[in-house]
Amino acid sequence: DAGVIQSPRHEVTEMGQEVTLRCKPISGHNSLFWYRQTMMRGLELLIYFNNNVPIDDSGMPEDRFSAKMPNASFSTLKIQPSEPRDSAVYFCASSLSLSTDTQYFGPGTRLTVL
Amino acid sequence: AQTVTQSQPEMSVQEAETVTLSCTYDTSESNYYLFWYKQPPSRQMILVIRQEAYKQQNATENRFSVNFQKAAKSFSLKISDSQLGDTAMYFCAFMKPRGNNDMRFGAGTRLTVKP
Image 1: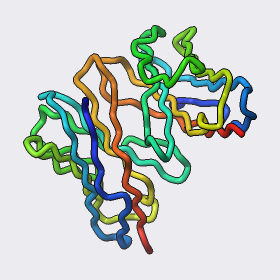
Image 2 (image 1 turned 180 degrees about the horizontal axis):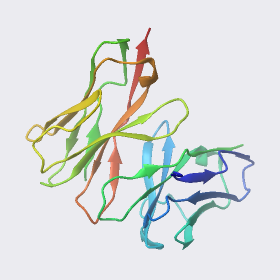
Image 3 (image 1 turned 90 degrees about the vertical axis):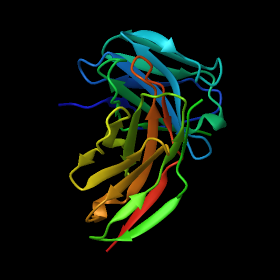
Image 4 (image 1 turned 120 degrees about the vertical axis):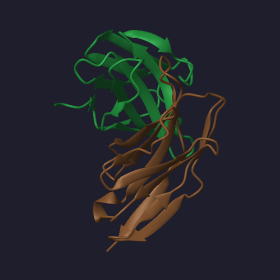
């Protein structure tokens, strides 16, 4: 079975540019999560969706960050404009539902903003 | 707010030996979930083991087992017969009861298995 798929695996961009990260959850999973991992702050939950609807975006650092889930098989996390402090590894995870405990993670996208 | 503490930033163990990673957490909830995730150099986050707080029996997955002490809010991971492939960062995580999948992670423990 395919796991959570993220693209790109690596992204290098310049400050001020728009960055879009993509995620395909495991088929049949109804909940999707975006995390950010940095050395300073560890793993942080940014936002999560249930049945394509954003449930909690309180972890989104600022208005430059936005996330969408137009359908059950696709989500994006967009940063516009990007800044060097956004450099991190961004993980997407999915679970069967909000009533199911286990989240399965994608391989992550390493973002570098120069 | 829930916090998760991993007090050992780095540990090492000889191949085939046993190692225990510590984790404590703070919560006022009576029911919750606890996890150990492994992150090898590939960066993939891999679920190692999970424990439901309402279950008194410690979870076990092959060479991995936990020592769950609810009263002490402790959740340690024991790796038996350590293998080179166990070298990774290990994260302890706490999740609130069902319906709210806000998962909190500890800072991680870097484990190195030496040949």
